[in-house]
Structure formats: structure tokens, C-alpha cells
Image 1 (cartoon, rainbow, N blue to C red):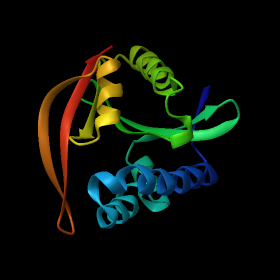
Image 2: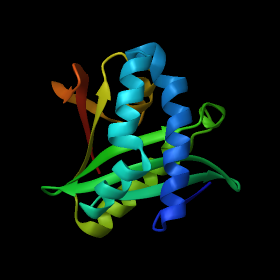
Image 3: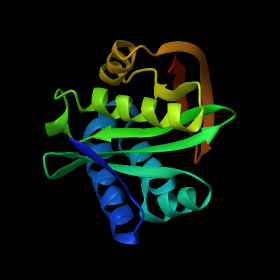
Length: 162
């Protein structure tokens, strides 16, 4: 496994293309097709990712051997690292790639003097919640965020000290 920062428009576009596949596959049963379509456009599309990068987010492509199979997005905030996104293709799950990504993120935190990684995760995303808990994350709060168009994100806020 290796991780590469996405810096070119083409690399960002490959993330947006993969996001479309992963989100429809993974989240449709959890939040429904209409909300998936809305959230992909608002948060995962090429234009959304490019805007986030302009606002200080970093995106990394995750490879299993030479196959591009996932991505993560991060943003430093108040001495902590916000893990905005971590998504893997269905075929890449269960291979301990998330564990390797977290080791990479912990190392980034140490290099940057950040003490904690935090994230939000849908309360009904049971498989992801199990992975995060296995990696040492604890639920510290909950939030219901209005994201527009009549949709909300109903999430746990989780964090782990590095």
C-alpha cells in the first residue's frame, strides 16, 4: 500500500470519479439515493474538492499495490487533524488499508505537532464505526448538521489521541 498527495487537476478528478462510485454503493442503503446524489455534488465532486483544497484541505490517494482504491481528505484545525474523508472501494475493504492510512495520519500529526485526529461518522454507518473504534477512536459527541436541500447529517463525533 502507498499514499500519494493529490495535487494536479487530473488526480483530483480521479478522486471525484471514485467518490461517485463509492458513495452510491456504500451510502445509498444508509441515507437514500437522493441524499447521496446531493452530497456527492456538494462535498465530493471535482469542483467541491478543488474548492476545499483552495481552503486548506489536503487530499491523498490510497493505492493497494498499483491500484487506486481510495482516498482521504484532511484539514488541520485548532491543534487537531480533522479527517474529513476516508473512503475505500468495496473490493479494497478488509485488507487493513484503513489501519495503514491511520499510521500515515498519525505520523503527519507528529510531524505537524497535532495531538488528535477527529472525524464525523454517520450514526448508522455500522461497518465504518466498527473500524474507527477498532483503531482507537472514541465517540466524544453527536451532531445533526443541516446541509441544505432538506437533508441533515446525523453523526457521531469521534477522536483519537496520537
